[in-house]
Image (cartoon, rainbow over all chains, first blue to last red; front, top):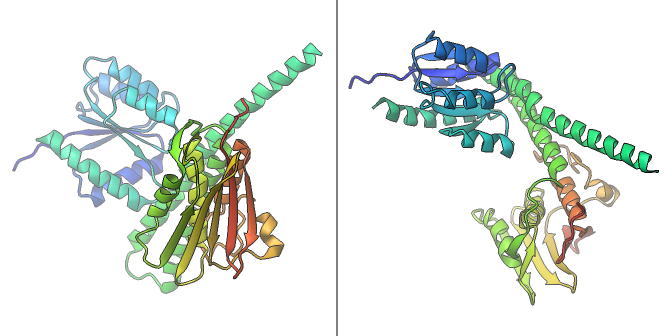
Amino acid sequence: MNQKLVNILLVEDDEVDVMNVKRAFSKNNIKNPLFVAGNGIEALEMLENQIIPLPKIIILDINMPKMNGIEFLKVMRENEKLKNISVFVMTTSNEDSDKINAYNLNVAGYILKPLSFEKFLTSVATLKNFWQLCEM
Amino acid sequence: MEESLKNCQEELTALKKEYDEFVYIVSHDIKSPMRAISNITTWIEEDLENGLSEDITTNFGLLKNRVNRLENMMNGLLELSRVDRMDLEFYEVNIPKIIGNCIDLFNSDPKIEFVVKANLIKENVVTLGAKLQKVVLNLIDNAVRFNDKVNKKVSITILESETDYIIEITDNGPGIPEEVAHKIYSIFYTVNSKDVVDTTGAGLAISCKIIKLVGGKIKYTEGIENGSIFTLNWPKNIILKS
């Protein structure tokens, strides 16, 4: 079967968390092209100016400098070209207010960054199943 | 007079704001580097894969265990700080059912025997259900977790007075030495080293704060054959100070 792998954009400011995602991808044998933006403003720039191919999935951190995840989501949902991208929020925040804000902006999932890499691997493996559906 | 009252209120508002910020920092900003330490440790271990001496493997295990403990402590601290601000919904609960739900969490272990006796006229009450469940679960968890016997026994008696529900939880564990019994409600205090029973030591501190919030009481007494007896008085009518 010749599947076309969807592009994924990771919006994350912490270098170790970026490594975490890359490592989890490789461990789960996820070969989707992964692009990285360091904050909301950088991500919007990449998307609006088509610096990267339009991703189908965005993995989004909440706590970031310059433009945080929730602010980024708000802008994104108002943009005709970008509003239909599936967004997975990935954050340390277990605050109800952050979760509600995210779900109000129509996110596909909320992943709590766990302390252990092993637990993160499991979360990413679950996501892989969803992404494969997007590729069909 | 009015002026000083206004100053006090302003100070209180500022303090509350500072406190909220502090809690937020603990829950987010400090957690990220901690997670990084944990993750990088795992990666180094993976990358070295073969050729690790027993000592190094043990030390990796210790390192991860301690970071884990740090996270649990931070979560405990956060939970303690949020006792009077979260889960404050009143709803109707059935007291024996709440106890039963807590016990169900341990029932898969055949080495734990639970005996529940209830003598209640009014089983249902409108209360802070989530809080009551939290306290009961913590007391039962302690009765099991710190129990050093192969066959663990936990007895729960539920009674009521005119004003309170009285829940007594008795176990056949080692009990608490008299000289440290007054310390058990302090956060992070554990009777034994945390290496003996891996625990955070936040549960009783959180429970105690909840009980204070609702105007209840908790008392520890030594059991007849060692063991511990915790007696919880949970008021039927809770009035929260705004």
